[in-house]
Each structure stands twice: as structure tokens, then as C-alpha cells.
Amino acid sequence: METVFDFLTVGIFAGLIVLFLKRSVDDDNPVADNDEPPVDDHLWQYLVASVGCAGANYVGNEGYPIPAVALIIATLAFIAYVLRPFPGFPPR
Amino acid sequence: MFKVASALLLAAVSIAPAQAATSIILNSGSTALPTFTTAAVFQNFNVPTTGVNNFVPNSTNNASVATESTTGPLTRVTTRDAGLAGMTQDYLAIANSASYNLSFVRPVSFFSFAFNIAANPGTNAFVTLNFMNGTSETFFGSAIFGSPSTLPTFGRVSYDVGGSSQIISAIIGKNADGAPGSSSHRFVVEDIAAAVPEPATWLMMILGFGLVGSQLRRRNGKLALSAA
Image (cartoon, rainbow over all chains, first blue to last red; front, top):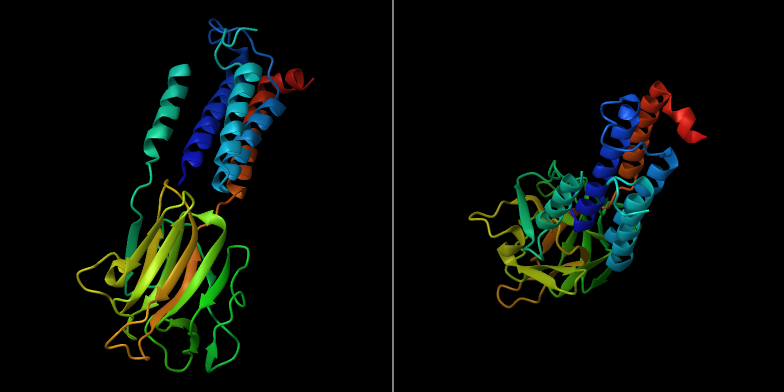
């Protein structure tokens, strides 16, 4: 944890893991599902987002900040549109 | 969730400082690397022959970390029989008007070397660090070691830039000095180290969490459903 890209990408990855584990455990729990509609997620979608974080971290630490920031934004967009951590945002 | 995510992002941005001063870590009387770093020695100057040899750049170092070049009279001295304190086997002795230049293959956040001042490097010895953002920093004399009140005979000095601009190249050298500009004055360095990124960490994190998540999903009967 030394560069700004380390903090950014590991932060996003941590949020992704929380989302992934939460959706892995509470799918059959009717109480937990009260406020959120069920999400049809797949393991590979989390893999794509994780590789996005790892790739952005690598590219950023190699000394290419602009491609790294573009990759971070693309990863965040992928998470927001495909994995949908915030119900109702972005609207479908 | 949104609050947590934005707090994480804010924290990540605020922790990383703008170009801050390089922190200099001095280990007196020990050439061991600080325990907090993943840095590894990539140049120990060891050669199979004994005796005094002229230093040949890119001969014994790890070329995947840095490429080397030199200016002026550098000498690699074998100390297997009568060593300077802390210097194992061979070391690099930098004479007046000489420098040892490193160009890192990947920018590094941590740069470190062992030293011995018995040969009196003097106030004309210097270390220059060139950063990715175009700035550079040069330390002369005891400032190389963080200006301690008493200079140790030998030890290790490390430069940690933390989250600020990474080091792309470094120079360890010695300007021509006046009196007492004896040719016997040398800046003696050994065991050059740098911290390089580790992509394997990401692979381990992704595999580990993927395994835990897939086991949880299998237990919940969700994997078969979602993998369809």
C-alpha cells in the first residue's frame, strides 16, 4: 500500500468483496431480501471487476496514470451497471 | 453501501499525500533491510574472482530491476580476506568524480543501500533521486544518511517515498573534492535494494475470495442457479 493507485484499487476491490460475500450468503434469507430485489449475478462478473482493479493497479504503478484512471472508471462503471450495488442506480 | 464506498474512496484519496519529502531511514551498525519492506537486494557486486577489479555495469545485478551505468573511476574491491565492517564479500568503492547510475525498469517507491564510511566519503559524496513527476532530490554528505548527530561507521540507508511520486532513477556518486582530496577517499556502498510491485498478491486475493464465495454459494445452492 504505497501509491495512490494501491489505495484506490484496493478500496474498490474491498467494496467488491463485501458485495460478493454478502450476495453469496443472504440470497436465501427472506429478511435480508426485504429491501433489495434479488440480483442475478455471476461469478465471472466479479472476476472481470477484480481483474479491472488489478490491471489498473499494475498500469498505474508502472507509470501510466491516464490509462490507469480510465481503467478504474471503466471498472466502476462495470460494477455499477452489471453488479448493481445500489438498487435503482443507475436506472435500467 | 454508497456511504461506505464513498468513505473508502475519500479515505484513499486523503491518505495519499502530494509530493512529500522523501523519508530517510538509517539503520546504524546493521546492513539488514527494514522489516516493513518487501524490497530485495538486486546488486551485491559479488564476483567470482578475488582482488581489485574495475566495476562492469550490468554484470552481476538483476537486470529486471534496473540497468546500470557509470561515470569516472569506480572500483569494485574484494574484501573476502580483510573486510570493511558490514561489507560482505565485494563492494563498490566510488572515487572522486565518479558516479554509479541506476535506471529502474519499473518506478520504485523504496531504494536502499548498505554503506561503510571508513574510507571517508566526505561532504562531496551525494545521492540523487529522480522522480516520475520530473522533480529530483539530491543529498550531500551526512544528509545522505538523514543528518544523524553521529554518523555510524557502517549500516544501511533507505529512501521511502511512500505514496508520492515514484523513483525512476538514482545516482550514488562523489564529486571531485579539494583538500583533503586524497585519492584514497571512497564512498563505499553494497547490497543495493529496491521495492518492486508484486502482481502475485492480487492473484492470491482474487483466488482466495473467489474460493470462499463459491463455497458459500454452493452451500446455498446458488452456484448451480447463477452459473446456468
